[in-house]
Image 1: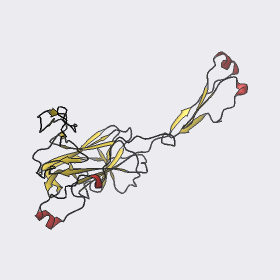
Image 2: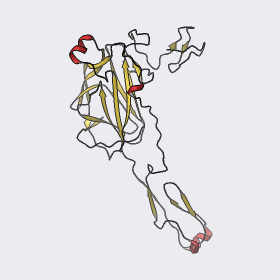
Image 3: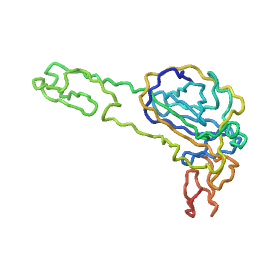
Image 4: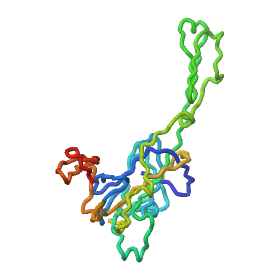
Length: 283
């Protein structure tokens, strides 16, 4: 696990990073970017880099940087279970979700991004790929072993067959470089990014905020990356301590747990929206 100083100029791009929350070592069930968690619970931020390049990540919770003005480096195809507030190169206290009581509001104030976890990330730039073409001579070889010569370009492939007398390639160089990120190549977006305005509105209840929990000792070391892409991407997760009926959440819901229909009692998989037995919407 590595980190990089904030003073480095960061350039952003692309979108293949998974971010979710865990409590008691288990992944929490996500509903439209929201995670229901009882007040007083501790949690971790689980990150998975699905790219073959390093990802550089910054994290803000309740509008505050929790990395002590640094950024995390997630290695290619690796995961990180980030446990708490960073000081220097050590995460010293767990993330703890508490209710924003009246006393807290009067002393600390109310922030528009209370309860929100903002994760901004970028990847290293793609390295150019060079395809080297080897020409075969003399002429006799062409007649006895006819094989096409191929020139590689970003969007097209050109072939040439026949004797060397008719040899007239479109490109004169014996090797061509191309960048997969150039025009004609597409990048897939495998991660949903949640906008603050689309998150469920729970403003009628006291919001929850994240504070320092139990002491921990998660160590990091300094690392380095290649030049980064030019565009950043953001995932926003929201912690809430109330359900849709306005009642406090008493226990977290994990992804492995089955959802019980309150009409017929059927147990459904955690990703279900409707009961597989009676068709009732599962809240």
